[in-house]
Image 1 (spheres, rainbow, N blue to C red):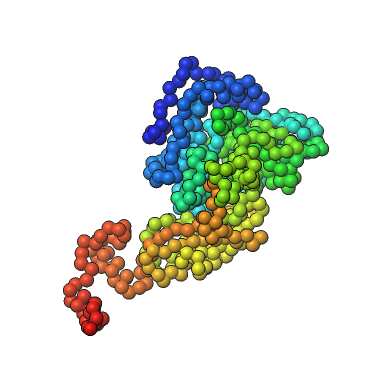
Image 2 (cartoon, helix red, strand yellow):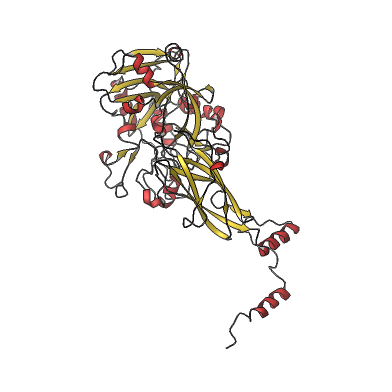
Length: 518
């Protein structure tokens, strides 16, 4: 475990810690909260008895240079106080076991992490080890042989199905789709740097450009499962998806739950998946079963899915009703209400430059290689990517042959060699057009919102351009190379004269000196 956040007070138990028994054999780390209001009330009383650490300040001050960036002391201590401390260490062990060793740990617990930026766009399909993780609680360990899924609510024939039932192709035709999942917090760090907002370290974690990934998911369409359950009863319009993870919110405890509308399910755009890129789901990604909701924010793709309820209205669960809301720029801490934000579902068109990186020095021959990703949710797809080397005045289209495969519900990777004559600091930016002619807001400020969701503005990076095709620059670089010196970092002064006196005097004579004659 990483060292605690510097201002966090160590946890000290007040008396004997409670014990909430695990509900089922083979379901380690799962506690059923929703069916037991007395247990939820007990947790509320426990949490009221403690003074937990304040959220760390990570917006008005520079982000820590550590990895993990934030450690989640509040959420660890919620678990400790409720006798669920094992979940903290267990979850971190799955990070170490299932994720790449150089992941960027945005939040240690509940785990939020993204891969290194350059590797994310090396392959059209993201490897399981490099796929971003956005968890709201710990990682339950559910034995696939002990697992079941309950289907209830407004269905004609409620059922309990095992994983073997769902995988029986005599009952359910198997479905496989390439789908991108994207956290609505992708690129949030850009909003934080310019205009801070709500500072909950879990809900508003400081994500970079890597909170997106693409996989081939295999499972069964939820529509087929509902048909097997006799279909929906009159009035059913939404499907509540419930996960086995424990979620704390404002002094209360829940099982993670969201809902998706029936129209989404009816279109076969909600998959109950047990396979990710041809392998069983990793624990950290929801094993043994998760939802994959095509084109929606990642928060709707519930992991460790164990219950589905057909409802007349969207679920009242806090993740659906009180989070992932989009406010106008006039709304903030002084006046925000849940009712004056709208629920984020379809992801808008967005893109990011993954190379070069912000503040890079780029030595080039008049063309600068750029690459990145482009995505649009809701069944739209990127048709054009444009980049600019001057902050957005002149745009160049990425060659079609340098863009990856089109999918209805997945990203496209792109590359371009941008013509660049200028030297010095440049602002590169990218924008994407999708098939419905949607494009991106120009600036971060255009789409700022209090919860810092959906940073879909043109992505911008500042780079220092060194154009080797210019004779003077080529000569300087050659001279440095001969002396065994590097042009980077550009801020390191050169310990040599920039030109001999004879050359300086000849230049001044040619220019008539520095001062006027009269």
